[in-house]
Amino acid sequence: MSEVVLYDYWRSSASYRVRIALNLLDIDYRTVPVNLLEAAHRKPDYLSLNPQGLVPTLVIDGQVLTQSLAIIEYLAELRPEGGLLPGDSAGRQHVRALAYAVAMDIHPICNLHVVAHLIEVTEKAEAREEWMQHFIADGLGKLEAMIDGAGGAFSFGDAPTMADLCLVPQVYNARRWGVDLTDFKRIVDIDARCAELPAFQAAHPDCAKP
Image 1 (cartoon, rainbow, N blue to C red):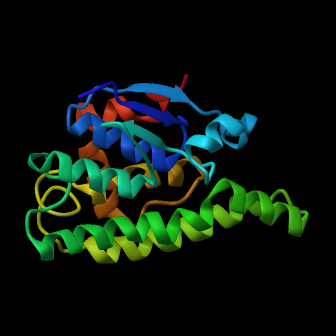
Image 2 (spheres, rainbow, N blue to C red):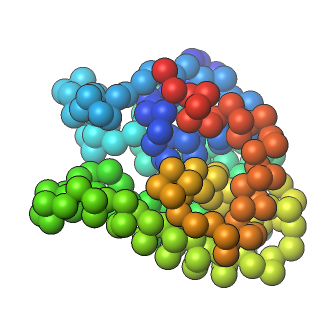
């Protein structure tokens, strides 16, 4: 395999997911930081690579891949033995539903550019924290209901899947914005279990920060 390059922002949830996936699958990669706060994602050289101007972007096997879940699914197909997606159709659907509940329902509405626009239209800087707490807590409450009562140590079964790759960065964001996690016992337990694994530890924003 030729050199794998991840264009990454250390605090991006989407980038965080892909770092965990690469680590779990033992795929060596080089990181190229894309500083969102300095608008590096809007520069022509990066837009030529990723026209959406989003992170992450993964260069692998001579291809340029975008969108974190599409990247993770590519990696899961590349290394099916890694278990990021279950081997059966019903299991894959279940894991995708859990992952999408975070990546498509919580994450987009809590994205920084969305919240920046909120502050602009409301002219209330304090609205940001209230917005984040409300939508993250609401989404995690629904996710807790989806995984409550499910067997296994992780979101689906006894090994991490794509669902956990989405859950852990969202819990990181929840703590960052002061969300009360008291009622999300299953989520907190899974997050703690993931935190014991080297692949998750190495992907943590504190380790990925340039």
